[in-house]
Amino acid sequence: MGTAVKICGITRVDDALAAARLGAHALGFVFYARSPRHVTGPRAAEIIGALPPFVSAVGLFVNPEVSEVERVLAQVPLNMLQFHGEETPEFCARFKVPYLKAARVRAGLDLLQYARQYSAARGLLLDAFADGTHGGTGTVFDWSLIPRELPCPVILSGGLTPENVAEAIRRVRPWAVDVSSGVEASPGVKDPLKIAAFMKEVYGADG
Image (tube, rainbow, N blue to C red; front, side):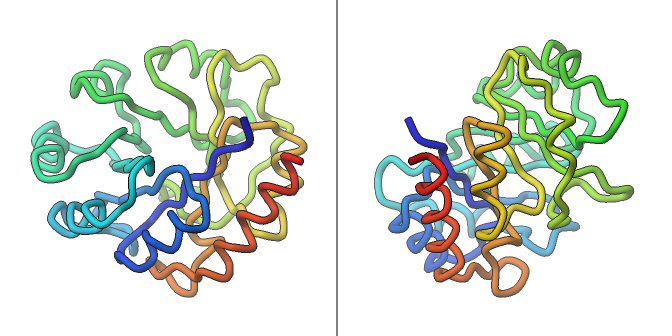
């Protein structure tokens, strides 16, 4: 199987449909109020309701309250959760929905221990570390910090663009890549030409 692609920060039906038509496997919806890509539950449900089959919907949270996640799940048909804060393994697993755990990669972070800690996660999403933020920085991190022997699928994120995604795939060999700002015209507004260019590079790297 080739590298899967998740396009995150979807806020509009047209962007979701364009991403699906161009081959995205999953779309990410940000339920974090401080993000410029934040969507409400009803808005996300409207977008997901317009999707064709076999495109997964992923809900992104940052240090949420239990009630917040439960409220979104009651409104939105999500296939997977994605936690970007300091949520514990017990917190992530309590909703009985498959989840991804994000790690903000920096020197000194033991990713092998992190993977063991979140062993119930379907995969680790590896993003760039930046003080005071929880992703969406558009910054590339040092891919050499990723251990080859991680015991779980890797979703590579952090500053990916049509210009660097092929190199990232060849070097890291992740299960999937995750892109947001790298295919945008402005925060929360996707550019279909950039999505098409990104997908072309992913396919080329897999070939």
